[in-house]
Image 1 (cartoon, rainbow, N blue to C red):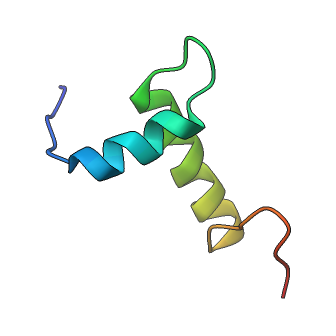
Image 2: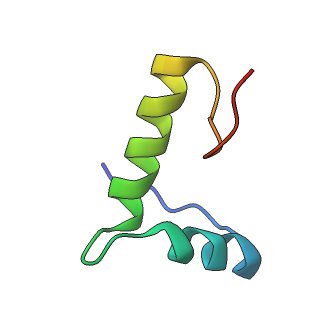
Length: 49
């Protein structure tokens, strides 16, 4: 079952900057959630603790 979520225009613009060609929002969000579940946090490029 599909669900609809509302996001701000600003967040959509941010997501758009990270989308690969022909990638859907669902694919991008799935990838982000998988990274979060694996690492326990979102990593920023060039950042390390």
